[in-house]
Image 1 (tube, rainbow, N blue to C red):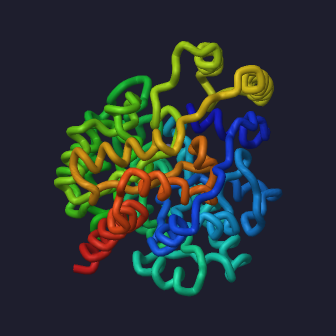
Image 2 (image 1 turned 180 degrees about the vertical axis):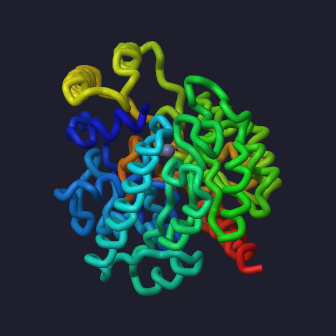
Length: 404
Ligand SMILES: [Zn+2]
């Protein structure tokens, strides 16, 4: 629902302008930041690419848009995963085909904008591409797929999307699908974790060299994947449940299992996943009422969507939201470091899908995270690991397994 509402607001251009840009960091910080290979493993920018008015080759601004090639360069971001996201709908053949077409369309657009801006960016498919492109001063654009809905129950489609350059699949989104149970399905578990079909998908992804993304999936689904996967797994955009008590975040037991598996969790920069919402504010209460009133987003008529947009706009203007800060975000990195070690944590912004904090409103402000880690005494080596080293270790292991 968060994403559904966010997308609606994005399309309507209605988000309140409550985000503060960072003051900029010192040269010393930038030097360390630029030396690191920096990778953001999740953004939903392909949705914005479907809007003809959006030009990713020019500088845009937050909150309307949080990722483009000039701002990636400004923020010293070497690589990013563009997720072809499809919202989960009722699993009818027609809805599955629509999701399948939409995923292909977003992948087509990703290739198209990279070709049009080939001095700045290139589509990347191998772990080593980021290093090769960084030397040329270009951004590496990897492709992921958020939600296995477009796969339906056709195992051949896993290979088909791999062949199109997709290197990870987030097994499900906010509702259960044919692959597994979600952490946030209102109806509760349906398969008790991975479905029988999901138990075919995981080995297929191993065989092809695709990263298995365990963000969004239920705790039981996560443990099923850990048991079944022959390679380390990763969470492209998830945070820590002991800090922000959202079901979508990782428990300590999950973090321990992930570390044992050699995987990595990429901290998600979305407000409710970083900090528990302040439930005492009028904004929170009103927002809750709106969510209840419009809880069937997927089946809403255009007139109802228009009504929701108007009500949400009034709410955001009346009660500007206070977002979590860079320090709140680094608390999650600290938590993983202290519980299981620095080798198992990275960053997956969820920009253009709801992500964005006070001080990290877009990709150009990523150096603020490096600044905060330095202030907390992180070494350069640790910073390198968080920004890309840990994720590349997992990516390489996944590739190596497929080449056996
Ligand atoms: Zn997501």
